[in-house]
Image 1 (cartoon, rainbow, N blue to C red):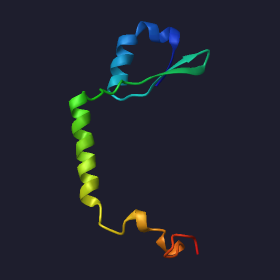
Image 2 (image 1 turned 120 degrees about the vertical axis):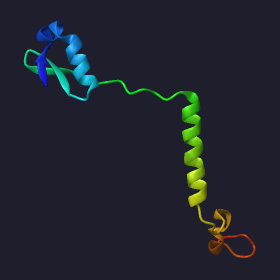
Image 3 (image 1 turned 135 degrees about the vertical axis):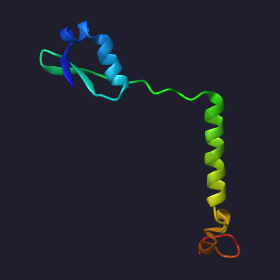
Length: 85
């Protein structure tokens, strides 16, 4: 929905309700889009963030597969004396 700023003044409460419900509200000035009303997403509290990060870490740890050590990944480039071949 596009509406001029001057018209929006009279119905701001309704426009905010519609934006919260998911409607796209664009305020125009002199026929050009100026502002978009969008709802603010609730930010999770620190405990919820911590739990989410823990879940992500556990998920990654469970998906990891054992393999060769990265410390040895370039050994084929070096001789027994430790110098490049």
